[in-house]
Length: 465
Picture (cartoon, rainbow, N blue to C red):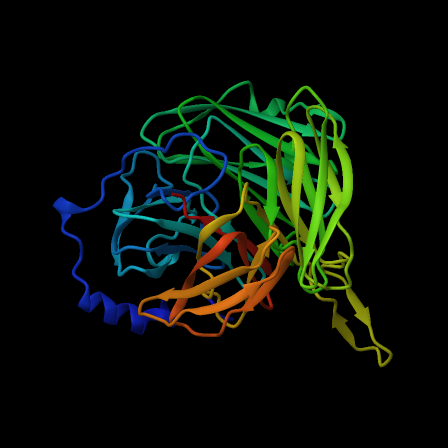
């Protein structure tokens, strides 16, 4: 697999490390604290938090970093041992460029949430988690609101649902975690009224044990004191893939440039935390053009709605969701039949394993933009990787696609027609680990990767003004 491991990039990294002096201690970046609350992610910020990272003997993770200008970078990882100091690593990016940092090369804590700060921007970070059976991840977050929404959860039989609440800051956080299922407000008495999350630490919550056998579970995390960064992980046991995505905010529009690849069956999961019903409209955008108003529905007050999206026979497409009120939204796509762990007997009595479940989940974008960073795109060795460009406007977009890595690469151009998506396949070049995408009119961008272990959808990061 095209794994993001130190051995694969060791030669290039060592060569660059020799050429690049380590940033001096006195001039290194300083943490400035959380950014003002925001529902989206913007590459204009310099401080990013990645809640769902794992590092051990079987599973590894990576910080996927991209910066437009030259930048010093500081990675901070809290210790799994209480009251231990942060583990910090400094490196440099020659901008526009990209770096990948394996967590296992720094620590092997198991759960390993962390933060990344750039001395300059625009810059952005995504995270990936990998093993022989897992390929998951999504973009990290910069803004830290008081209330987070995580739709897309389920604890039905055969699923494992975990929530991590990460406090990367120096103050104690007090949080309230609520669940909303198909039955309404879901009591979570095991969590108590208020949970303490100490500074620079995290808590993991197994919702399959606390609230089992629920088809739909929306998780709401509210910080009453301090600030936290939550993430959700959905899997199907040790023999199958899993997906992870960060908490999100609310918006009246959500764009998903890709909702399915190969044979994955997509579902749109919407959460309405308000006391009033919300009507939603879904428009689809494919390689051949737009299919407007494929779905109208209503999300009841204080509830989650899981909406199956059309089966296009494997043809990829994206969607735009507009609503009459503020909602949260994610896409969860799975293999069409869950046969994970079962075997079939062939005519000669030989036994052949059925392909394991693949699952991908991702957050969306709240609006199109002229410029996007896709940290990590191109970094998954031996995987089929693609950029997905979605144009929901009335005119054609001329798009410049610039590969980013340890050294300069020539950009390419493509045209994305009105009401269409376009796939740009990523070549197998170990020197490219991110992309910068610029368009003549606003578009939305994401990237995907598929290998023998699983599939991952990762949202692009808008470069703000």
